[in-house]
Length: 150
Image (cartoon, rainbow, N blue to C red; front, side, top):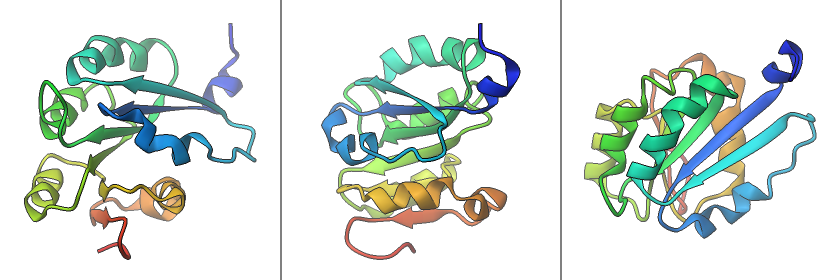
């Protein structure tokens, strides 16, 4: 059994995407802080819904939840809204395969902290996890593979 201090040092990252290979850069993130990192991959919304509500409560805190806007069985927008009670302490990030204005608007409406687009950039995950971004998420951020945040 882990003691309380080690539980606080753990981070859980969830990826819900039919193509998890798109997150290869994130999987190679350096971890100089020594924080224990757990990664959970799901290829569909239903599989995430079966596991995440239990996982988030019974094991470690999920700190980042990356959800593709298009899943084989539902939209990422719907999934994020269904998971929000179980992931109350995490940042919900919606990921588009390409930038679409209507997806950006839908991401903002469903409460996503960020809307990002593929190809994913390793540097974005530093921004998403930075304390200055965590302090005030009232201003939602869009990151795309072809330019600066909007």
